[in-house]
Length: 465
Figure 1 (tube, rainbow, N blue to C red):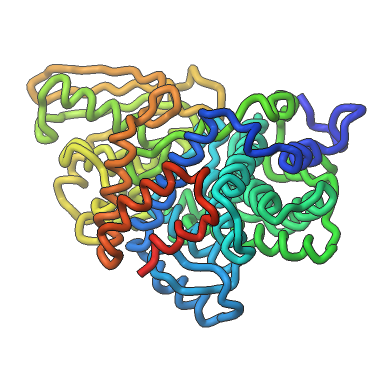
Figure 2 (cartoon, rainbow, N blue to C red; figure 1 turned 30 degrees about the horizontal axis):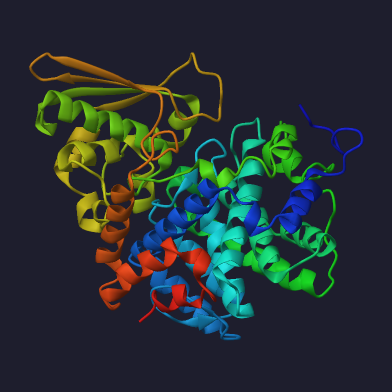
């Protein structure tokens, strides 16, 4: 395990190995599975951005960014405003994360696409002429960097890892698009490290700003790229230095395996769908509840007691009880009792379940009060979300149990293509009524064949009025 100031003897800071891999890797080096996964989650992320245009705080945030003004070089998705690249990257990242519907690397606990993709879009549009192949390899490498840093942590998550590691991944993607050499990209990594931010405090409170933290880091990434391009120098030992990322933001870490896998293992292949628009750590309990309901044919009204035995990470971050009154949408999305009650009553969970009038529903609150989340004390790993066990006792005395070792949407338990497209179409139906209906299938087809696209600007044109 590495926790020293300079890392293992004979090796420079790990960031330079990651940078070298970004600079040296070509589209032709990508595995077929990596290409397919990158395209799948580009479409998924664009879909959740469409749904994200409906979330609280969107118009207010966009208003602030528009008031700031600046160079009209990059597009805000769905609404179509032109803003400076840092501002559009921030806004588009907020759109992708604010419904808690964005894809995730479960082991790394990183929503890598949510920072990497909006920054890649902003920089590619500002630069112009970026081909589909150039875009795909940049996004995949960005996901590689963010996820590799995330999976190297051996400590409980405390800072907002989707934003902090996402910032490094976003710089990697943008630097690849910009054609940076190793020295310039290393400087950009050092510059973004001086800006990364985000903690779990707003997550624990259910505060609205929680969903903006990826956006803050997306904006920082574009800033870092612009400054590095002008020759500004950044810190060098940004991951393993005395005041480096691992020491200050994570704690214990072991980066050797991640570095050894560079070029051989594509982390984008380990990204998973989120079938429900709520905290990923709630998904296993939702899935188990719906499976038991379908298997044993009971209704929500039949439930007398519901118990979920979950790992420490799940209990700490989403085991929160539902207090009286209407919770904030952000709090509700991160509360197992709320989302499981919704799932049992409605048969699924969707973005409309977190609109103001539904947050007050008496039936949901009554059922949530009978849902208990208990920490499994036999599990010591602070970074895993499974296994978990659900036990339901019905009012007629019957009891049903289910243990889950993997969660729906994970690469080992993936959504089918039709389920993937169903999610995208549902997001489009809610948030894209102002866009030409024909654009939906045109966008699906374009992403399916993105490696043939030149340039990628058509992606943006299909997502604005």
